[in-house]
Image 1 (cartoon, rainbow, N blue to C red):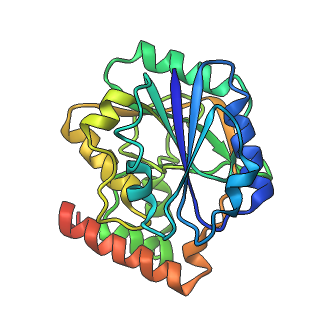
Image 2 (cartoon, rainbow, N blue to C red):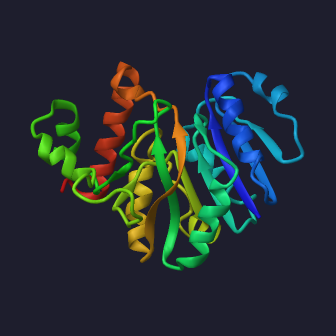
Length: 246
């Protein structure tokens, strides 16, 4: 069995509907948790299904804290941390489950990710450093920027990155529970980088598996909104205070 959780907050309904259907079209036993951080529960009426459990929080408690609400509920073999703006075909999850079965040292797997334009998203990174984050904003060094995204290697082949962006993280449920989910000090941003560090600490790996792919309607919110940029900066400070600046 597989479970999945999607955290909602004032989402584009049409894209969200495609994301939900992508998961429900998977041909294995499944359950989806929709955890709604919005001020209104209006989305509940649109997602009535025996395979869906809707949890209305009523306030924005953050990305990681919301996903953590279902940790004690799930008894599946695998649990998918899924963004509300991802679309994929029915064979993606069974293919990735097979890969997890074959790799006992892997805590989670992520497929190749593309924009709707089909351009690739470079979701694999080395562990963040302070210079790395500043360089992404101020563009001191293009070579350093590309190196931090593993662009010097063949990204058509599976490998074990330091850090994988968390729009689609298919976990072994036991590993996610052993990690106690996300660190709730990160309200938004950097919680995926943090959990990747903690996976290292338990002696497990993260696998990028580009043999299957998904579409992510990624809008890079923190580069367009001052409020989100401040949140991103706050999370980065917490991350570096926890893990160091290098």
